[in-house]
Length: 143
Length: 192
Image 1 (cartoon, rainbow over the protein chains, first blue to last red):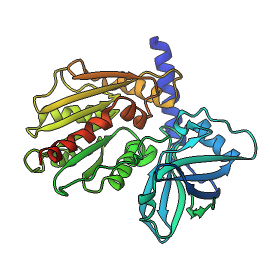
Image 2: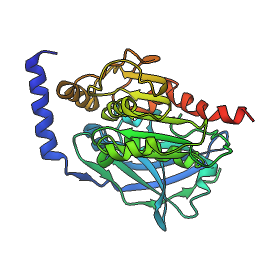
Image 3: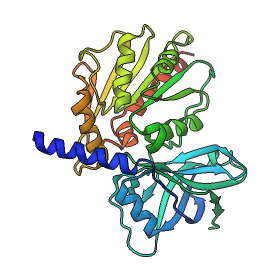
Image 4: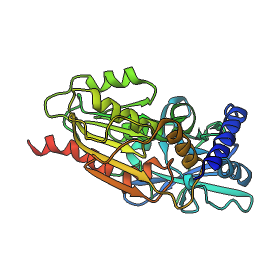
């Protein structure tokens, strides 16, 4: 990398940090489901709008699917999210259509520790500020 | 399908002392939560371990956590990402505590010479080798421009993982670093 391109890169990063570091994106979650997975796991699915997913992708926002107790937000378990089978933090997932589903897994014994489970997304970008959603109830899907 | 949720948490025998110290890099504590959430998941999955998380800038707290007494033979693992990797190496350079595993995940910033610190049992270094660069790789490049590159040739194991700087959990799992940390907990159990 040449000195000039490094200088340009540094300048752009600096400007972006100054302008955008304080931003907080607050995606509106559409639904959150849990269903049995294989080998004593639970699969968590979170539906968000394609618009919110595009914001996450474009701004490269790292986030976790956060299982929280609806009555005690301090009790929480972060799950690494996948979208369309790809790790969300690779930021190359599709955002076509109206909705996008983020998915993650957790051992079933962990979910037992959440008597009233809710789901939120939480994270942030290196440059573009934070991501925080309001928790919504986690609904169990029957087989 | 997932990396920081493992289905088979170890059944531990001793709730005291055993300690994993995770050190996050720039923006980790306040924004990206990359290492912070990984450590939080580990704490839920293995509550019998003393898992602590710090920002790279919390130097005194990290020093205190590393130097807090352990029982004889119990593991102490120090895992750092980005600027946290530099801090992990710096801490290892200056402590007299016995660190079982030092894991530096795509460290950023100079941290003394490349020799393995005498306090460290095994040093694993992982380098991100992205096929497609993203913001995290740019941030790491900027950091290295200003703060230098971590000299890691003295590591017992050096691996390049095809992923971006921000994918800490991918580097932990694909490099076998998490397995090494887990294995450090198996040893006392096997002795019984």
